[in-house]
Length: 292
Image 1 (cartoon, rainbow, N blue to C red):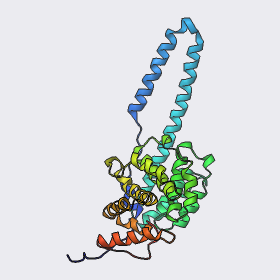
Image 2: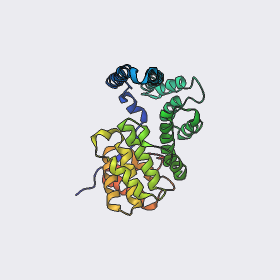
Image 3: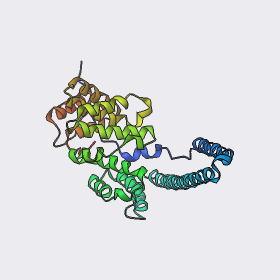
Image 4: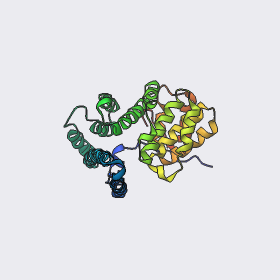
């Protein structure tokens, strides 16, 4: 059989996927369920008034006020996130990216949500600046719901720069139960699994990847990250056949990411497998790739 024609590959531009990002929406069904639950509490409190007096009503009233306050906080957070995503969706070319970065540059220096957006736009062209932006976020002042997103994005950049110990320190602080969205959970799991695998905790990494599998259609958008984590996990567990299979699948769905396996500091066996996989798939690897 003749050798396949060699094709040059380039890493996927992160901005290409921005237009497809799903804008956060108010979950009216969930809100209706919560309102219904509080309605039941109020009815119960009034029915129990002869027994508990106004104490029960006061407790329900306090809970209602807390729920309203939390609801307003979430609404404002969602509104802000939608505005930031609208800015990011305009970054479909270099000029658009430049304008988006200028818009995101306004506001508070420690704005964690804007920092995440800026880092995602910068990561494809200036990983060093993306690192600087995320490292400048004070997690103690960031909203709880955003803290793990900062950790995940920063850990991913550390992994791509072979700063695996720094990535592991962040991964150890992340918790999947704090993230309600399935795709985000899978992304976190991929970052955590790779961090674990590359610091010797292969079995822990495997447990995560067994839960968030790369072939699950629900995680299609983060499949390349899950496959990348599978490669490192399989190598750590000395299962080279599984590593080869994961890398071959990655070459099919996102060949540009295989460049990351050839970065300085990566295990020689992984570098060799990446070169062989790209060659077998008909791609010509380029030595100037710095990250996947």
